Image: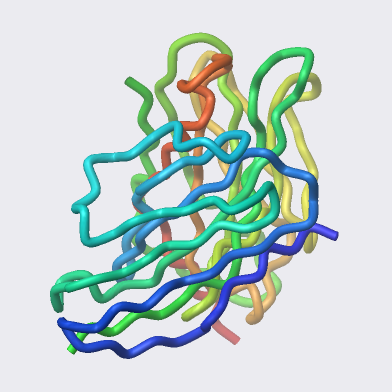
Length: 117
Length: 117
């Protein structure tokens, strides 16, 4: 099973709303990622969690707040977003080779299409 | 710093003809190279990877890629294109680091492949 599941698939929210994106994987991967992707552009890394601890925050505005409740779940809490935050938000996970310490391929979910109005 | 270049924004090929999508990379140390495909409004789907070993790697749906260390290239190929192969293709690289640096998956800008019936 190489599946990463994201909910919801689509989300429309106002600039004063609070919402959350959810991601789940059962591959035993201990690294989980949030990416933001604009149309016809490559994904941009936002956050990385390793062993449920935040390892990388790519200078993301505080209106995006990640959370990793356990090794299978990753959330992205959204508050007071701007219209320019409208994008496809992708969750991914990867396995770390215990011998080399290296991560290889990342597996992506289908994404949440977010529209901020 | 690591980088990926996909020199073609779009590649058009007739159905049944061979296809090539180009990728060159720059990274310190040994590269871990990947190809992903993205269909409209969907997440990224892993196609294949090069970590070590044979320079020709085979992946999903009949795709293969050739690693060329001297030319720092990792071109995606398929002997006979299908209309259903039409999608956006991303090349990506990780450096062979351990630790926080191993999370960085750098993508090219993407190449839109159109297979013409």
